[in-house]
Image (cartoon, rainbow, N blue to C red; front, side):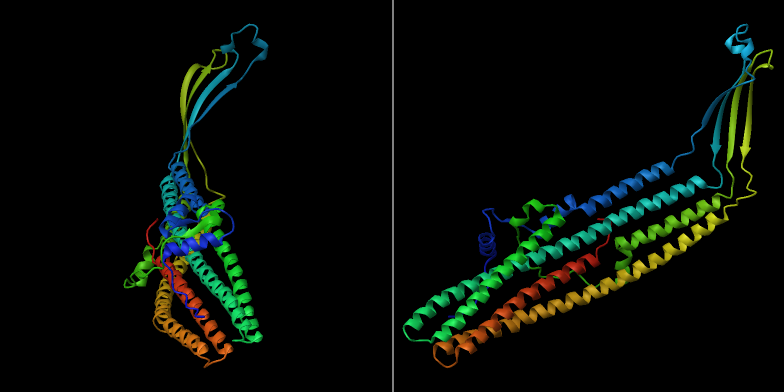
Length: 420
């Protein structure tokens, strides 16, 4: 009995997996591009990042607003005892006043600049969340594809062993093999069935992981991949420092440096006291004053106790911390890019070695062992060992393809620039 499972055409693979899954639901095949698009629409982290941008935009509108004027209406020198003899307008001195705060020292411009930088940081954060979510979705999608192929491989192996055990029973009845040889094959068949059950469990877990990322939890039992392993890595020719400068996480950190710098400007602006200008209309009856009159006034805070040194120092420390975090973000981004490029190259080399050398050699060895066993040249234990070796190599080939695909996805994420 020769165990030589070849990689099936994709439609056959998906159809086989649909039959393996419990329940009557049809498999819902989804491509990687469709999974990424679904995540863009439904991922909770992405929606939160979009809401943060809206909040920052509202903060900018709020910052770019001058203080409101204040209206006051006062009545003084009221004479309650003369209410019965005088009109309502003659028993009190009435004052209507409007006061308008006037900001000085560039407070508003600093506040607006800081809010604009916060908005830029929120936009870059949204891009970074998109980058990370896309990387997670790609990783989950490739994990699901690997789980599908492992499940299909284990299913074929289990079916082959089941068929082989049936033939072995006939051979034992005919006296061609011993009862011990039949028992060994039955053990291998049971092991294959157990491995198939575990592979199906891993498959369902992979479906749930992908479904949670793309907002399709209800459809998790029917999710299946549509497509194949990636064949090419992104370009790795650009300078890592230049690529890092365009990454959204680095640009978000730089935007926060700008926001902290403008907040420091705002703290310095506090040293310039604001002026409040006021105008008033006063109605004073003849018995209480000079009649109707108008007036104006100016009020200014005297900074004799609080000169806002604490606010300036705190803003300076915040700026230094923002600069340190920006330097850290850039260093981590450069390291991430370099590491991802090396990992993608190494994973590609391993996959090529498995496909070109290891897998053909294992299949040839298994075929040779099958022929030798039928010819009586080797014992059953040697045949079983060759079959297990082939199974191990075919699983290693799936893992090698999955590792390369995940490395490519990581490299794509590491070199992603822009806000989206």
